[in-house]
Length: 116
Image (tube, rainbow, N blue to C red; front, side, top):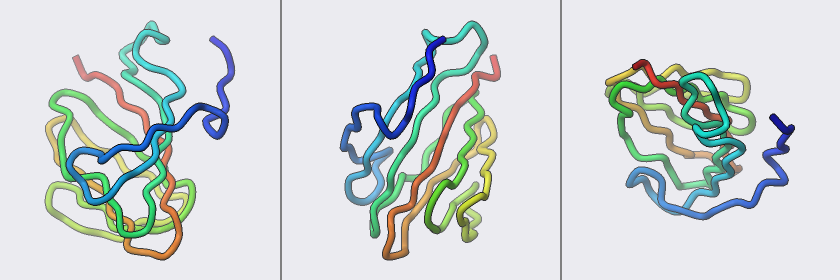
C-alpha cells in the first residue's frame, strides 16, 4: 500500500451529515484499499462556525483524532469540549457529531471499521 499524505490529497468541500456550513474533506484510502474491515481513512477540516451533523454509522465504529483546534463533541446527546490530541471513539449504533465554535479551523483524522 502506498504512503499518502493527507495534506496533498485533493480536498472536497461538502456539508457533512447535515451539519452547519461547508467542511473540507480529504480521503486517503477507501474500503477497497484494505483486506480488513476498515471502511476508510481521511481528514476533515471544520471551519469556524461549521459542524459535522449528528449521525450514526449503524454497525461501524468510527474514531476521530483531533489534530488541530477545539470544538464541541456530541456523543449520544452528551456534549463535551475536545481539543488537539483528544481521541473520540464513536461506537456502533451510537450518535455523534462535532461543532467548531472557535475562531480557528478544527482538523480531525478519522477512520471507520465495520463491526460485521
